[in-house]
Structures are given as structure tokens and as C-alpha cells.
Length: 498
Ligand SMILES: Nc1ncnc2c1ncn2[C@@H]1O[C@H](COP(=O)(O)OP(=O)(O)OP(=O)(O)O)[C@@H](O)[C@H]1O
Image (tube, rainbow, N blue to C red; front, side, top):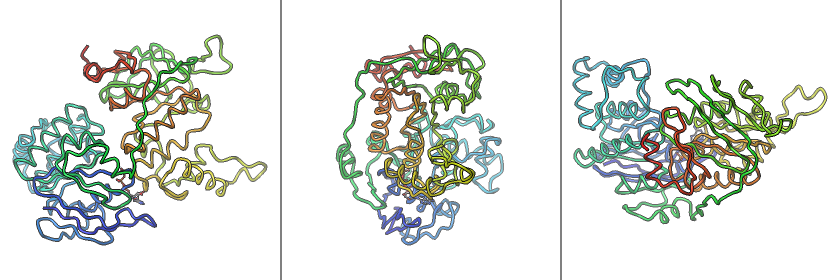
């Protein structure tokens, strides 16, 4: 049994954990939910030994644990599976697996153990494959195998299904059920997806503002959970039919090579007031299409056009060879999924981000050569207020929770943006924040912007887009009116079946 007892953790003035306490029984599939910034990652970090609590205790089977790093956590039997699996790309599956044993296993013994662990989990991992060639889902399986072989009796998963396919999710859930039911392993499952909670877990702990605000045996209605999480229920919006305006962005016959994805013959038009959703499995081309449109990836064939005041009859000009910066100046903005690696700059403050994004007015005369820190702080304060970011002007992005990083990114998008390209706009966001983001995006579309977004959430695609384009193997294989796109048809198309 895992006991979390009165855990406190402060970051400056923020009480990330403020007396957190809950118990996880052996063999339990235990959910942990709560709004963005509620303190979930902090508490699972502390439970696994990756972060140190200011006060409180973690007990496993009646014994107090004294941990000063994740290795101590795993030695005590607690394994944390990271959202981005920690796998070394150039090494093989087997070598990665052996790393966890700290030299205690021979290669032959490691090979046997890897096979046995995969068997136990229902995974198929080729031991001699180079880890770099694995999908995110397979890397996750490898890390899970390593944690279990190292003796984890409690397995903690922090939003594990964000970047894996539907089939891999089924495999993961089957493995977790088997571990819990047959081996009495305890699973702590952190998620924002209430349908996953209902599907997998027996019991749930709900956190808000650093505290546990409720515990329930499942099933529980979504309405009750949402009420617990937020103290009120956000209204869920639906996209209404719109009359679109002039074309703002057009891709015609575009082709490119993007890592292992070959994009071919891509045709895509986005009009004013239109929201276009891109569906598809990871690596099917959605990511490349957005990068091609933004100019971050160069097109090897075809043309890309953007609306421009000085253009001829159809209002579009060829930007195929234009830089991302030039396209941005023409009113196009791209927000990538990996907020910390590509969207924001770790180490720079919120105020410096505002400055970098060009949101701070430039002074006149010789003073323009100096940064105007006061003005940047004032702009940052306004953004924090408008976008309800849990941060101060001096916070850096790595100190913010996932949801607040996305708010910060959105706050940097100028008012004059005509075409907004977004990758997984609500990935990692809680229900209320996701709703809030879509209110904002819909308002932009209503005001005349065109939006293209990719998502792995079929519900999000159906509810938010006007039109859904399905990508498969680098091609756009279908274009559907979102109102007519039922989940089964969409699921089939995404899998490459007609
Ligand atoms: N390293 C850090 N430095 C400063 N503040 C931090 C740090 N890590 C977390 N925080 C703050 O602690 C609070 C709790 O964050 P935590 O990441 O635990 O929330 P969460 O529930 O996991 O959120 P999300 O669902 O958005 O991932 C947030 O206000 C966050 O800004």
C-alpha cells in the first residue's frame, strides 16, 4: 500500500502541494485528476523521488521512504513513467533495457529478462532495434518494461496517452489491468481525459490548488468530477455553421520530405472565418503540413500562397520560397505542440517573451537601443491578467504547468494574425482550460481569421472544426464536413481504411 501523508511543497510563493494526502491500495488502478496547475506532477514527482518535498511522508507497505532521487524511488519499488519516455536513441532496445540494471545483468540474461517482461506485459519489442526507430508508444513500452524489471511495485503514469496511437493505448491499458489484477501492482494514473479514467480506473483522487478536494470510487459522472475539479461546470461549446470568406492560405500540390514522412500532392485551402482540423496518426503528415505552411519546412514541390493586400484577383501571393519570418509579417502564426522545445524559450521570463514577440512598444530616439523593462513588465502583466496565466512577469516557462505554458503561448499571438496554425491546441489542458482556449480561437475565427489545427482527439476535431482533412502516409486522403464526420468513419480513415 502506498501512503502519501501531508505533503507540502512550495515554489516561491506558490503552494504547489499544500498538505496532499491519499492512499493507493495494492492492485488498485488509481486515477489522479485536477485542473492545470493543481499540483499533480509535483506530487507524483515527490512520490517517485524525482522531487523533494518540504514536509510530509511517503510510505510504502508501512515503511517510510527516504528518497533523494528517482533511483531511490525505483529502488524502493516506485517507478515513474514520463510523458516523454527517457530512452537513449542511438542505443538498441536491449542496451536501453540493460541501463536500468546498472551492470548487474549480462547481455544474455538481459535478453531473457526483456523477453520475459515483454511477455508479462503483452508487448513486442525487438531487442536489437535501434531505439531511435521506435514510435513514442514503443519507447514508452520499453521504459515500462525497464521499470518493472527493476522491481517497481507501484507504477505512476503521467498523461501517458498524449502521443501514442489508439492501438498502443489499448495495449497499455490491457497491460496495466493485468499488472493490477494478477500481480497486485498499484497504478497511479494522472490524466485530463475523463473517458480514460472511466475506462481504466477503480478509484480517483481529485486535486485543486495544491490540495486533495475529493476521492471517489468509480464510476462517477463526468459532471460530478468536473464540479469537484473546478468548483463549477464549464459550459461545453459546439461549433456552429459559418459562412466562410475569401481564401487566406492555399497549398497546392505540395510535396516534401520530413524525416520519415513523405508529404505528396497536398492541397489545402483555408478561408476567412474557417476552422480546418487535421486528423491522422502520428507521422501521417499533419505535422509536416503545418510546418510547410509556416515555412519551417521547405516545400520541394507545389506552391504555397498567402493572402496579401497587394495581390492580384484571388488575393493570394506565392510565398513558397518566403521565410517563416516573412510569412509571420504577412499575418501567419504557428504554435507548435512542443511548447517548451519549440514554442517558448526556457530561461527567458514572461516579460522577455512579450518583448521577443514584438508586443512591447519600441521607444523613440536613442532610447530605442535599450530594452524597456518597465514596458515589458506592464505588457506581461496585462497578458497574465487577460489570459489568466498562473505566473508573474519574472516566471520562466519551465516553472509553469503545461496548461499555463499554452496560455502564455497564446498570449503572444498578435491581434492582427489572419492565419493561425496550431498543433494539438489543447494537449495537456484541463477541460475548463480547453474550453477557454477554444472560446478564444472561435472568437478569432468569427472576427475573420482562418485556423488550421491538428489533433489526435476525434471529439475535438468533430466539435471544433468546420472541415476535417484526414492524413494518411503523407497524403490528405479525405475531406469531411465536421458535422457529418462520425467517429467510426473518422477512425477508419485515420487507420488508412476506406
Ligand atoms: N520548478 C518549478 N518552479 C516554480 N513553480 C513550479 C515548478 N514546478 C511547478 N510549479 C508550480 O506549481 C504549481 C503546480 O504545478 P504542477 O505542474 O504540479 O501542476 P499539474 O497539476 O501537474 O498541472 P498540469 O495539469 O498543467 O500539468 C503550478 O502553479 C506551477 O506553476
